Every structure is written in C-alpha cells, then in structure tokens.
Image (cartoon, rainbow, N blue to C red; front, side, top):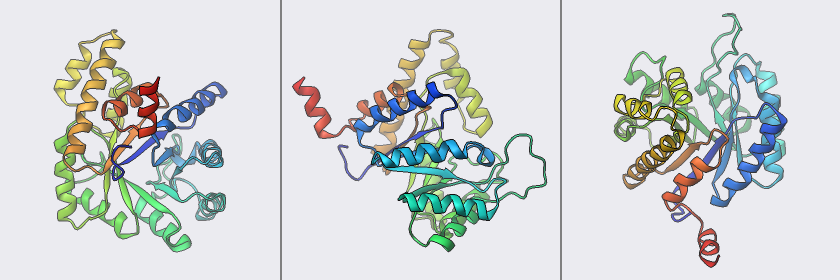
Length: 290
C-alpha cells in the first residue's frame, strides 16, 4: 500500500457450490496483489454457514493469508461456540469479527438474542487478548435501534467489553460517516472505526441488500442507477467513479482505512483500489516494466 498507516481489508462470503468456491479462491489470489491487512469471511445467521466459513478460514490461513472469521452466538450454545473458537485459536487465527447473534430463518422465538458486546466479553473472558476483535458499526444507525443515541451507546458497550476496532455498514453519504465519528468521539469511543465500502455492481441486488440492512441509497443515487436500465456496463462505470470519489473523500478527511464488501468478485473492488493508488510499490514497478 502507498500509505502504511491505512488499513485495507476485503470481505468474502462462503460459496455454496464447488464452482463458487473455485471462483472465490481465484478472486482471493487476485486480490492478494494489493497486500490487504486481512480477508474476512462471513458467518450466516445462526451459524448457518459455520462449516463452510471454518473450512475457508483454515484454508486461507494454511496458505499464509491473514484472515478473520465472522462469529456470532445465534442459536448456538456457549460450549459449541467455545469449541469453535478453540479450533480457530489452535489453528493460529488471531483476528475475529464479533457480531450479534441473528437467528436462522424458520427458527421460532424460543432463543434469546445474544448481543455482540456479550460475545466480545465471552471471548475476552476465555481468551484474554489473543484475538484482535472487530465489531460492526452503523453510521446510518442499525435498523432496529430505538434512537441514534442508543445505537452509539450500544457501540460503546462493545468497545468497553474489549473490542479493538469497528467496521461500518456500507453507505454512500460520506457526511453520515463523519457525523457518526464525531458522535462516537463525544461518547468517548477512541478505537478506530473503518468505513465499509460496497462497490456498485447490480442495481436490483444493491437495493435488496440495502432495504434489508438499513443502508441508505440516497434518492438521487437511486434515480441515477435506475436510469441505466439494462445497461450494466454504464452502471458499473458510474458506480466505480462514484465509489472511488467516496473513498477519496473518506481517506482525505481522516478515515483510517477501508473494508471492501467484495461480493466474491475481483474487478469492481480491484478497479477502485487501483484508482485510489493503494497498490504496493512492487506491483506498480512490475506494471511499469511490462
């Protein structure tokens, strides 16, 4: 990376098919050229992708790739979660993303929600400082939060429990992140919070994701994306330009790094990273020599 103080990370989700897994492994190899600080691997609601997540994480680690599994209690018992964390620790994993325990679809209300601050406290109790713990943050506020202030207090609770840093939900309004960071600092949160970045690849999928997770797509942006209709290439070109500019504004105004939601694709994320100049010197030199 051009600035060693900036942190760069990429997120994957476990593939469901052999073909998807083969593609994912190829994308991981390609994105490694940017020397990210780590890759993260998501964990489905209620641990529904547990085995796939674990297998992918351990495979990455065996290749010498820095990797952070996502983890939540969900419908799991403390014993099963501890056994999983033991396995990660014994494999040499040193970073985790600790999340709230969402239930898998179809599960009734018999399970009690387990919040991320409880998972952070559980990990610190049993493993001390072995793991660097990431937690989720919501610049536009968690869709189930009762108020902005409550959500900030809840985030502070995660850090008070022992989290090291945060990763935000994606957003397209940089002012939302800057205001959020101001409020975090006022609340006494000093730990770094890294912006989550979602490349714009497909309008329908983006609106579906956003409506489900509470990430706002500004009205002007929705209208602009709608205007491309079936012209996927023009939409991608516009999205690349827009998200590159978003990242530039974030970094120029003090964001400590970027976390990309890759959607298991190479080019959308790679194009933005190249536009930002976040390319190791040896990669740049190689390109020049060719």
